[in-house]
Length: 489
Image (cartoon, rainbow, N blue to C red; front, side, top):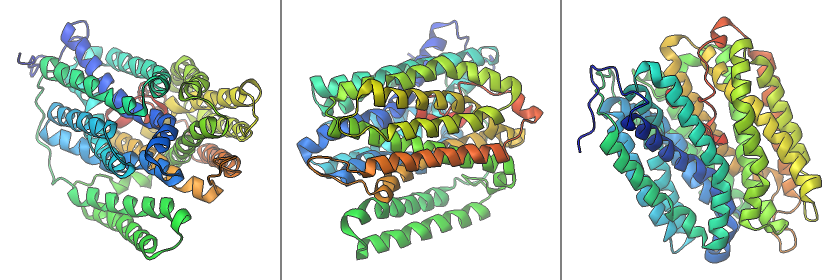
């Protein structure tokens, strides 16, 4: 069946079956990408028990995915603008689904990491298209409601994902966590092809910035390899080479973006102190969240003896607080401005992470785990929705899309770097009695310091101009926190 063509007809009504199925397909697809960041740490202990490896392998299982996802995200959006978001979205879904099967049948950790890299490529293609499809296909008067429905469905998936993932690890195998993506992805592909309108896209000027995408991937790859492998192997010729390649790649990216007529990252955005401050806060908070979630999932299972399901349930209060409070906080920030919640939220996150530093062998759930998770979740609920509003308030209307995409990519990159760097800086190590060692406590305190820095930067740089009080949407929240990716908000 040919999907409805809405060109010239204003778009689909959300009340129609095609409109609802479009929202379902995009929420399902993007939800799989987000959840693979949160479920993988729960599965990592079971993976290394079967395939072997230590901390560096567990880092690569997550960072291999984040590497291609973060570095290609802006390119994926640009490809959608030129080739059609539905086409790129479907290709991304197929790549993600096939790569998920490869993850599920991987015979070794090397094969698994390579498959995770391929998963990230698929995610980078489909994530920008998920909201772009809603914006292009749903009629204007229904888009706000459609985005809210999309965010709500993503939120429910975020709440259930770690629990279902933990249950799959315990009841079946870690392989089931990846294999379940394949049928879900195929359902999303079928629904998209059958019900998503083939809305036409106007001409896009400028050449595709392939050089910029290549430079940032090379730079982040070199940096990630150095951060993960140096603690295990020292400063060998390979780690020195990777560090050099990483620095050169990142510098080359800045040069390419400064000279490109159609850059993936318009450097002119950073002329705004407000925009710079909001993105520093994003990087600090998202990095702390990514590393803390990764290490806490390992600590609960490997040091405290939790099952994968129990570890997922232990983190449930965080998601519940996000679902209950984030929309209300977003509405308040829309009326009063983002400065106060963006200052208070990261400071509460810091307090929660400091409490989680006490989660060591012998710690109790009610006395140690729950208070930290609850305070951390409260801080995140206060932070996430105002963050996007603050980012968009720092640029003029012409650059809203680029600003949101930049902030989204920066958020994924922060998680990538923090997961690679924080265990090494904190001295996390493996031992039979205490798998993460004393480094876990140090890592949580460092993550707390990162959040505190984010709050201080927000207080110093974020203002509440009139532009910050209109147009923000709780649906456009931070990707690493299980909310909507803001690429197209």
